[in-house]
Amino acid sequence: MDNVKKFFVQNILKYYSKNKRDLPWRNTKDPYKIWISEIILQQTQVKQGLSYYQKFIQRFPNIQSLANAKEDEVLHLWQGLGYYSRARNLHFAAQQIQNQFGGVFPQTYDEILSLKGIGEYTAAAIASFAFDLPYAVVDGNVFRVLSRFFGIRKAIDSSEGKKFFFDLANELLDKTNPSEYNQAIMEFGATFCTPQSPGCSNCRLNNYCIAYKKNSVQQLPVKSKSINKTTRYLNYFVFIEKDKYIYLNKRINTDIWKGLYEFYLVESKHQNFSLNKIKEHLNQLNISPQKIISVPKIKHLLSHQNLFIKITTIYVNEKISNLNLQRIELKQIENYALPVVLQKFVKVYLNSKKDLDK
DNA sequence: AAGCCGGGGCT
DNA sequence: AGCCCAGGCTT
Image (tube, rainbow, N blue to C red):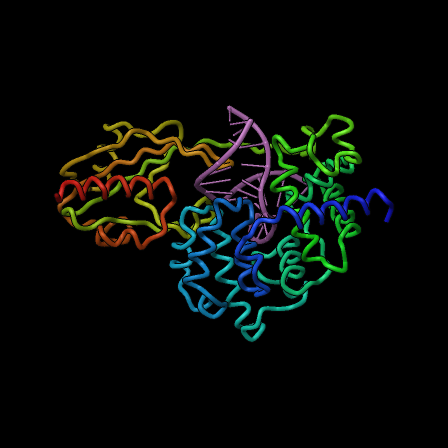
């Protein structure tokens, strides 16, 4: 390794020794807890994931408790965190460990990688953090830090670019302490060499940082693809029967929010339903409403979809049995995992109910 | 290889 | 309004 690379490694380690945050998953070698933290932190910042980690570990302190749980409960704990396949895969993988590894968390890179929901990054993270194995992590932080310091303009979302960064990261990896070094480079990216407003002028590495010297920090890392956003119009019918029951649908198709619950949904092509359209639709369903109340149209933004959502509460006096919906008691709804946008609606609705009861 | 999958925070 | 985040799975 040349002197610039040695300089890089030494200063990354020095930065970490002086600036590391005290995070719960850093105070353990338990591969289960490290695994949970890594899944939660995929595409998720520490600030957003920390409370989920705490309650997840409290409810499921070990592999067995997670494997024995129902998927609905795992999703309920995950409610609001997004990318719900992570929760479904976590549950599935816990059962994989029970069935294929005798309930003991696997201790080799290839076995860890074989678990559902664990890719190259997470396998390297667990292998190095829990078992001190020499596998370099390559995540968004590593792409950013390496591309800037070494001035690499290869696209991080191309096959060639990924291989290049992967090889470089493994060359730089401190084999004497892969756990410390892997966490150091990610911490440096997460807290100092940040996407916006990095601390370049005070950076201990800036003498040899190519992006800093060429004034191209803002242009790195390079991404070639841009995401394509689609717009959808969702019309939700919240059926309330005699002020006591509410009707839910479980999303089972390959689409957003798979595994979560929602209300009766009619998707429209160009715009949300008008009141007349709603009445027309209820008529087709053979449902006679006692009262119809819509909330103002909601714009809900996902990373790749813009959702325009109209939620209409339909009060009825008779049981609805022709729509293949689950009929539950109103007060039980807090036990079901809902998308955030519907969870917020329920919270407002239940709060107004509480006010009425006073 | 490309497309898909959430929600929050920052600028 | 656009980009980012301790990425991985499906097609």
